[in-house]
Image 1 (cartoon, rainbow, N blue to C red):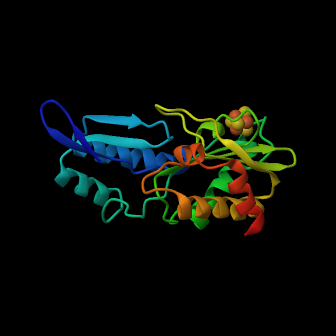
Image 2 (cartoon, protein in one colour):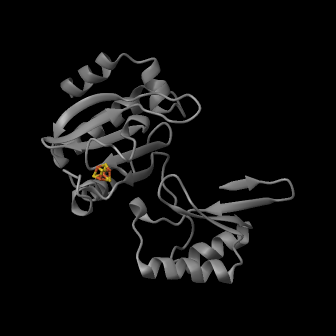
Length: 213
Ligand code: SF4
């Protein structure tokens, strides 16, 4: 990821962690490598990840290697990140296990090729701390299961996502989510985010596709 600054051109890398969960070993490894390479800035991103900012391309490769990767992650355009709250295991308000669901989504759908980057937010209750209504895919828990929201965006042209299914088990959610993403993939323009796609797509068309497939 290049950063153009007024005085030079530098790069940033984002080595994780998954869903904002860190261990002391992870933090020690990050600190060790950052010190060794005089990384000018470490930044927690909006997506619960940690970014090294301001490297040369050569340093970028070395840092990836020292953190245990042969190079930066390479995957098709698709799920950009999965953001999840602590869920019922760790939060007294949680009614569903958001971290476990996040791991299942990652295992099943992370490498699905999509027209544009797709952000996922999972919350363990309807307080929606991971802001599911402004994610491409928003998921939040209620007593009877998961609610699935599609087509949200919180950037320059915000869009409130549409609820496309409710009361889902983990397994049902994976099936409906995959169907929705495949419908999006088949009908969206290249680089068209889900929010812009849903601006021009009747919700009924998506719902009919989910019911038919
Ligand atoms: S969404 Fe609910 S379960 Fe998740 S952190 Fe917020 S209050 Fe807790």
